[in-house]
Amino acid sequence: MSKSGSADLVYILGDALRSLRENVGTTILTSFTLAFSLAIFSLFVFVIMNLNGVVEGWGEKTQIIVYVKDASVGQADSLKQALGRLPGVKSAEYISKEKALAELKDELKGHEGILDGVDANPLPASFEVRVRDEFNQPERIAELAGRIKALEWAEDVQYSREWVEKLSAFIKFIQLAAIAMGVFLGAATLFIISNTIRLAVYARKDEIEIMKLVGASDMYVKVPFVLEGLIQGLFGGLLAMCILAVGRYAVLSEIPAYLRFAVEMPFSTVLFLAFLTGAGMLMGVAGSLISMNRFLKV
Image 1 (cartoon, helix red, strand yellow):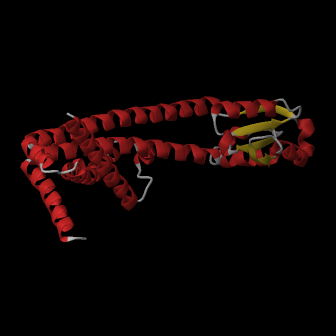
Image 2 (image 1 turned 180 degrees about the vertical axis):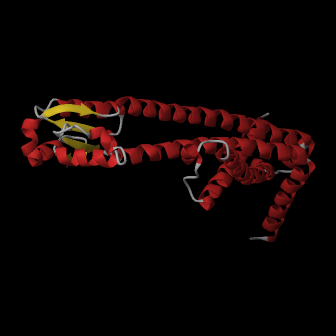
């Protein structure tokens, strides 16, 4: 790098730092605004990803139970093959009448007296059907259950349709809320950053006009303010991580243990810190460029 290039770089960096020191109040306010925006949006992301993880895990469990007519019990292997050929079926496990009764007795351990007086096994044989991930949606599960129920050997088909529909609708609501919140917070943060930079620009209006008169390019004028936004964004990202840690601790201490999974961090701390600082710096630069482009067009 040439001496003039090094001098320009030192001047630009010093200019940005000087502006931040002179406007320390607005710098802190902008950084905190950006930090809260990132922290709130991140919390929504945590909830969405953790709920999706629950749905995927639920997809590995039994979703559909098919009760078999007594006349067809002896054909368990062929029935299993018939189920496996249906689109959407991941696997099927045959549960004999004897195994179903044994599982019931195990669940009733200590209360076996409930079954006293029951001579014959009243439980039907069944298949526990697991559904492929791509079919793990209320309408597709309902479609698959309908196909299974149409099989002549199927006595009845059961699945937790209402629960699946409610969970799916809730997750979609959270996703839409996160997108809306992200757009709103992002727009508000960009507005605050761009207006903060604009105040600094107007405070140095005469200096910028002199620079332009002596031949300074638009890029040369913009860079100190872009660096200012970059530094504000960096601080905002670091603050967001702190706010998020404190917020998660406060939430975890107030909600029941079985709901705490929803706010667990689904990423490594280092990776998420890199994301927050990167997002903060990106928004800081974007806000600065918006403000400078408007000013230089005037």
